[in-house]
Image 1 (cartoon, rainbow, N blue to C red):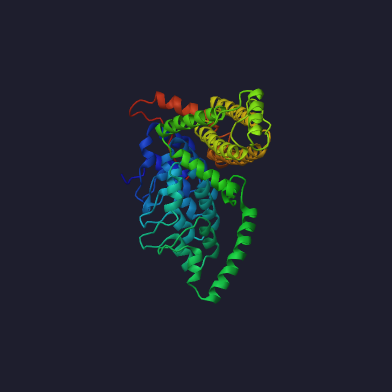
Image 2: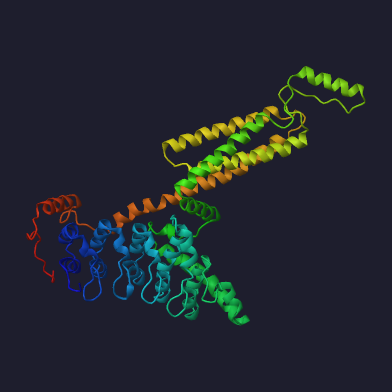
Length: 447
């Protein structure tokens, strides 16, 4: 169990071809620990063989969560050494690795703060703010406030070491210390002089962090290290809530939203009090009212509502808001494929017909219903654009960045180890290998 396997030796010496074949033939070797408490992926990472690390991740993304000596995972090592590109690569391959803690109860946030790796801490905070995962809301709530074996949260360590930039970064995700206090509450417990000094340092640290970001940030980590805007945070929250909903709940919500949509749409064609049937009846009604001493005559047209302008204003606005909310719910729940987009197009035409109907049945003497309806349309159009556009943007963020990071992390020499030839060679030799047959080249550990 604690003896170096051939895969350990290959990982230590960076022999990608042989390691690839061993992964194919003996996948169980990838999770075994040697006498130093390290897995083959740990060895490849510590020796700087990043192309081999990429091979391990492609073979099994779950290897990112394999714990070595001290309970340290590859993500912990990457954070400890400040390798932000590998950090993002690991997080994209296995988002659940953010949950892992060491034997001392330390999260990646603890490690980043203790080693004063501000760029790594910035990437982790950006990940917690943006990742689209069904457990993302729980991660953002519990991981920043997780306590190690000594009862210290990441904010406790930053405050005790007076790491102002780390405090400022942790304040963005509302991290709290072991007493449940956030950064602002901690400052209130200091003397007035200390508070002023810390506030000045916080203001200065903001510009320092931004300056260092410009100098050292690559395009693949720029998004994670950038500040989030309100509409982005709102859209990410909606996307996360959507991912937590099961298929059965989605089906039930679609049924309920469809019923609400049908009811509100039908109501506009049969409003309370009905509509005037023709102009002649309206003229006779006006004459009768005039002869009996009623109010002034009111011009009416066939097809307009009988209720007063004020009542229709209230009715149309409430009905319109209900209908458009139902449209938004349906648009967010349907899949974003060809059929889903076709359905959204049909729903938009349905909404257009609805508002044309309101314009037709509105009393000619009042334009308030039309104005209120247009305002409601603009309001929910903005909300819809935020939810749909930004939600799709951040839900597709992980897949897009993963493809880019794979190209960044892979440092293959096309002449020595072309990927296509290597894959074909592994499949050929793996299929031809008989039990007990030696098919692997010898490894020179000193190579």
